[in-house]
Amino acid sequence: MIYLDNAATTKPCKAAISKVTAVLEDNFGNPSSLHNLGLNAEKELNDARRIIAAALVADPECIYFTSGATEGNNLAINGIAESYGRRRKKIITTAIEHPSVSAPISRLEEIGFEVVRIKPDCNGEIEYDSIVSEIDEKTLMVSCMLVNNENGAILPIKRAFGLIKRKYPEIITHCDAVQAFMKIPFKASQLSADVITISSHKVYGPKGAGAVYINKGVRIAPQILGGGQEKGMRSGTECVPMIAGFAKAVEQQHQNVSERLNNAQQLKEYFLDVIDMLEGVTVLSHRDASPYIISLAVSGIKSEVMLHFLESKGIYVSSGSACSKGKKSEVLKAFNVNERLLDFVIRISFSDKTTTNDIDSLVEAIVEAQDTLQKVKY
Image (cartoon, rainbow, N blue to C red; front, side, top):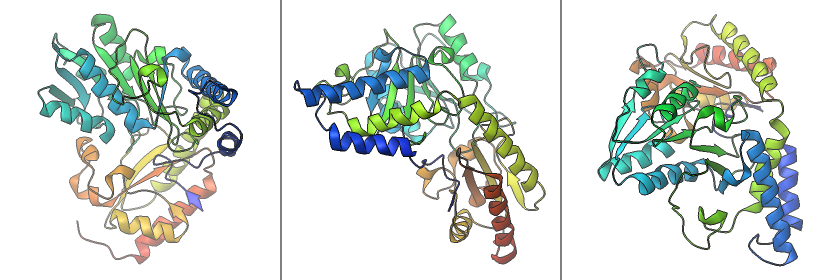
């Protein structure tokens, strides 16, 4: 199997799997219980919080565990709006956000918030000044991703958010860093983000766990109410095994993020050099985008057809975002991709295990698909 759909989910690493199993078997107490089993489970949570905080170079008290990035993004956006949205009702975001950001923002728009969605320019880039220039006295929050999940574009968040917080410290900044965490080196303080969302299953941890960094002094209205877990921010018994597995995966990686990024960049360059020799293949990701994600279109072969052809060869990719389920990508439209190509897009996303042999096999399979599959007109 050649797995090249890591932007959708990664295969949990052995250390994470072992940790999840150990906690399920030996440390199954409720962390809110006062007996030793509960105290041991609470220690697992506290250890995990320290590990995640260390990876973000942040205070452990700023880390709150969730079920994943979708819950985290909803908590951030709705919680900020509820806490600060009585007087200021303008939200600045981009037209290329993940649905877990764009959908709650659209819901807020329906109930009276003003929303400005920054689109990429003619070069397919979002410049920092296009974000900053929309700021005014009505602005409540700015929510922008760091790395786009469909084509790997890296947004100028550090510069944009830095300028915003210096000039307008009352504006709340939120960053969906799911596709950047453990792939692109950054510190919480460098992003100038008040709230940062991350996820376990994108970084070789188990599904069902995520975290939100909330800077001290920032008020977020809880969205799940109940027993007051996570210091009242997110009620519900914490899923300790998955959180512990998340932390173990991060612990395995956070010391060598730059080294792994360099390896991914070399793989990307190798792939682009090979794929550039093929006719009928258009690379949609920029060379300076995240090396972990490459979007391309194979003219005349619909995305789903290509996906299943590659699957028959034991190669797994996706047809754009895993959340789109085959629909034409509004995000890629916003990136000014020719609409005629949108039916033919596949997304390739590397892992730490990807090799040049995997890339050679992928390219060979694409060539075979071009030679054997019936093409459609476009």
